[in-house]
Length: 116
Image (tube, rainbow, N blue to C red; front, side, top):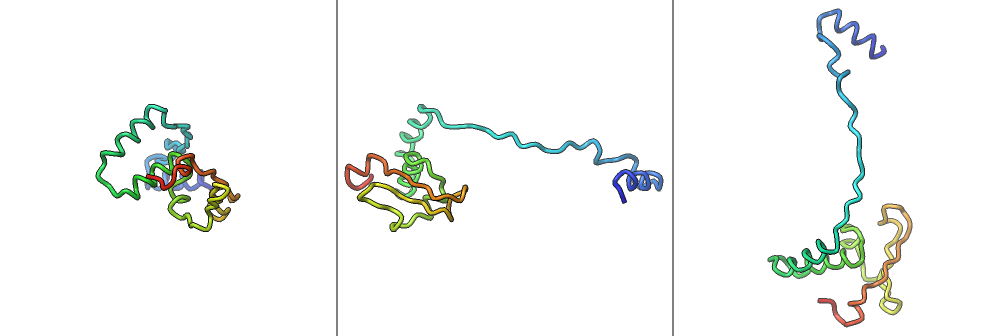
């Protein structure tokens, strides 16, 4: 039965006074291109030093800022994906949103030895 026919039958039977769904609007998704400004990034990094959390979490947040990878891509990284000679990290296509492998060039602070 079509929606209009069902509405008519239900209204005629006194089950519904009016089409309660007719006035509802369909939700729309509006994408947001929100990015942190350079000032916001600077403040975030400065404040990270005073946050009481594990050093590994601070390092992970810093790596995300420096490499612009998603949290899940960083968390699931394995050492065999990192090539220290060519200073690259290759994320396999299975873990990428677009299903293509992605190469991340290691940030400059890796040149200075162990990251802090």
